[in-house]
Length: 356
Image 1 (tube, rainbow, N blue to C red):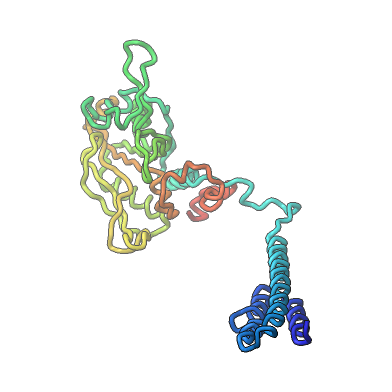
Image 2 (spheres, helix red, strand yellow):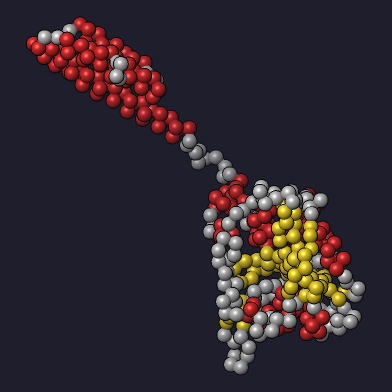
């Protein structure tokens, strides 16, 4: 090799040794082998040489190009391995460190919402009532003024079970926790003030419905109960649950077979941003109404003496709104990462004096 090619090789090797990262390595590669590189410039001069000199000079420059290409590629791979090793070292986890707090377990958002709902209604004097998940047709439908031809009793949206003994009526996986209200009125004398949280079942499954979900229903039975009591109770509950003391609440006429009059309850929100309590839009969150006189009579209560109101809400729906969860199905996918993000500390109970 001639002196100029030896000098080029030495300078390239020195520049490669000084390159400390991928950026400086790429600069060396371009300065020697790029379109305007030093070696490329020498190769372009071959066209002005005589054939014999061009042949010898071309072989010399091609050999140098092969050597520099191998040296540059080797240095690039070395720098890439060094960068990977540094990144792995920075991202390594010291397994001797204490377990992060979140890894000890988190309370599911539905469980947390049920605690909060219970805490709020407890301050209003409500107690928690429970009932079986498998109900009789009478407790789940007939006692609630839902006749046999009502759409809620069709096979399409109800899970029916065979009777325990021949001649008995069919059993159902309860479609609502209203059966707990019926059992309470049958087994307890007024005044009554209960909520009935629990699992319910319907043949429905999409982004906003699940075959198994959770409801919380409430019942108040006493003398002189009016719509004013209902409105005041639910307005205070919704404002406490969402943490919005001035949350707009609207009551809208509707129909349920077990209440008369019946009302849907809406809260103010922004359709554009999804923020609760903002904007000029309304969002339905629960149903309510005055207990139908026929339901009271079915439970042995004189509707001329006793009046009451009832309400029901989907716990998952309220939880989705409060926590900004877009898809109901994620509640039941058992993804620990999702639970870590949306879960709550199991050692931090829902107490009103601490704030919700």
